[in-house]
Image 1 (cartoon, rainbow, N blue to C red):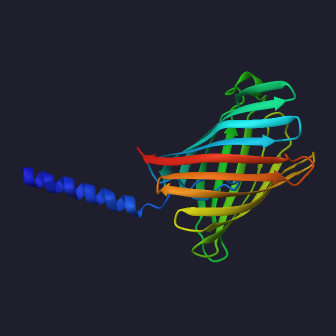
Image 2: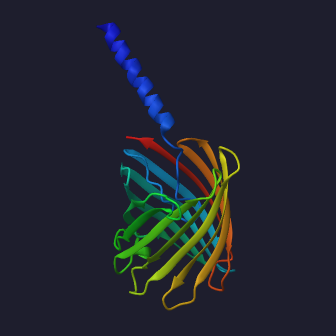
Image 3: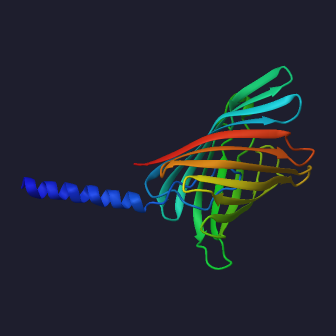
Amino acid sequence: MKCKLSTIIIFLMVFNLCNAQELPSIQTDRPDQTECPFITPINYFQFENGFSFEKKNDNINEIVMPTILTRFGINDHFEIRLVTEYIINKNYSEKISGVNPVLIGFKTRLFEEKGVIPLTSFIGHIGIPKLASPNYKATYFAPDFRFSMQHTISEKQSLSYNLGAEWNGETAEPTFVYTLTTGYSLTEKIGIYFELYGFVPQIEKPDHRFDAGVTYLINSNHQLDVSSGFGLSNTSPKYFVSLGYSFRFKT
């Protein structure tokens, strides 16, 4: 009986090891602004944590410490998402801090990559107006959505882009969002990207930006990242920098 039990335990250990080896390395929605179309593996929690500093102009800074994207894989085509951000805004001598309205959402796979058709997913969130610090509460629910698409250029390079819109919870006018990025694997662990993205309000002037960054894969479940960029429009920030750490585990 003991021999049979030992055989079963060894079989389960080998089976779990094989599954772990088959699982692709962690795919994150950071550090770039282009959300990736990949779904978090089934029954995995994935946490994407970041710190950022943004110099809006000579007198206004914004610090996010931290921003946390929590993802959980439901099946091969669907994940649920939670976004929380703690913001510190400094304007001259005044400082305001608190939690932005929490975003609850999902990502779902729409199309697999085939020829000219990119790997495509749809991402949707809704901001809960009262689920925030007093200084950051919104008046209305604030939805956002994106179509996330990716083409494989080669074994080492990909081309990704997003199209979508978001609302701020105060007005009915949407702000349209676009991103375009190319990623390249320098080694099995180090990747780089270059990105152009922007926010185009229905009424106000657009905000176009450029950024670039580096990712380092510690192992298949842990990743570090660093990125920075600058504004291309009069309404854009002067520059911004970001650091991040992402990890996942099975429940």
